[in-house]
Length: 114
Length: 113
Image (cartoon, rainbow over all chains, first blue to last red; front, side, top):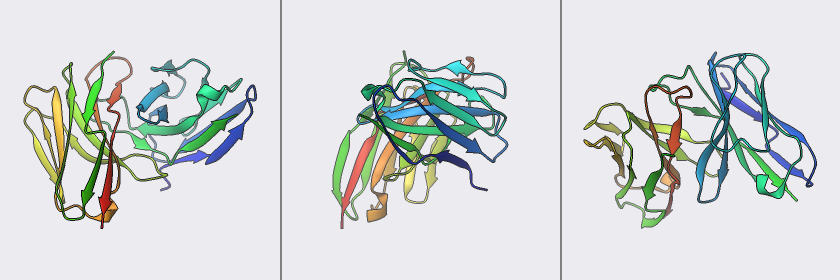
């Protein structure tokens, strides 16, 4: 099992450009998450999908959209990138929303917006 | 919103020394988790704690769920160079629509051989 995979690993964008970050998991998990990590800020939740067909906002959703394409895949879209979106983005998954479920994280996408 | 205070922010230690870090919260949590993030990688779960007062070990790592349910600590004994990384605590409550996990800001550990 590959676990949680993310593409691309690195990306440089110009302000105003758009792009989609891809995430897939092969663990048959129901719930998937997108986090961003900034220096000294820990991990902040952008959006999550409790199950296929549902998505909800997290702590910092502005400037992002998500799509739960199927049970395996959860993508994050930046419609008009801004320098404030320079960050490391992590996708994660859990079997469900229960409190005993811990997050399995992907390796991250390092995004720079110029 | 809920916040976790994780300390220290960073540590520079000699190989072989013991390490201690902790997290405190103004809110009660039902689950405490400790993750480690190696440079360039995603966080990986080290220890999960589910009961107040619980003390759990994983090799040289020991973590405890505080009795008040508002704090947790992680100890690493006899540190080695591969312990380098960022350690995150995370707290979670039952219920709610999102099963949200609140992360601390991390403790960056550097180990001198």
